Length: 307
Image (cartoon, rainbow, N blue to C red; front, side):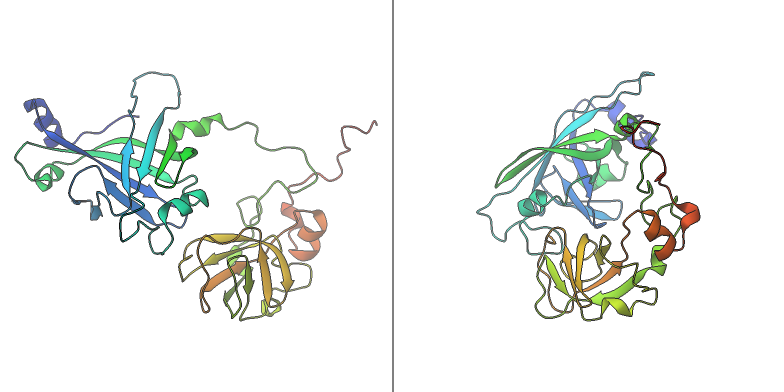
């Protein structure tokens, strides 16, 4: 990736033989929260955010390869975080009481966006003086793999955004089911028209949620569209910003998720429920009245059937 170096920082680096440096990590998670960490020994304030050396574990990176060429080659970077399991208070996921490594195992760091910036300052200077000169963005990418996970350390593999060029093309397959995702650009329906604000009632668990408002009270409810195969997005509580897929609508007052939410659900935690879709012709036509945008090909014969 090309690097833009601020003039003040470039002049500093050209004039110095020795200097201090620190990496600044911003890891943006699924729920929109960001972890800010640094390899410096003290917190560093940069861009209006405070980067901590150990509040969210100790983060380190491997070497970063840079090259100037016409080859669209994707580069990768090793990223690791370690925690001391005996340290109190325990390192937890932001906004929760759940240990950080448990949330890694639960998949909350999957596809997280990683930005690595580097700041420099002279020996004897305060880090803030160096921060004022600007930074160099060394790497920008996404976590693609967990290569090792233990009780006190996790190693990630991070690929730069060029890895997206490895996606298969053409992306559409001839299949009977609709190729669109409900509410995406091909479907065209607005999810705000098929939602219901709700909260957790007594007896809810991380897997099975009792509803304080009946599912059939949604204004769009017509008996064909339901919340089965839909999803919930929490707006309060420890799971705020996280989503879970609805495996089944057990009753008008209870939903079953396909997997437990990462954090405990408390009575009164609020969330928004969104309708689901079976991706078939009947659901699209009779349920959503959206046949014109149906993306399946149900009348194409199976390849095993001769014509």
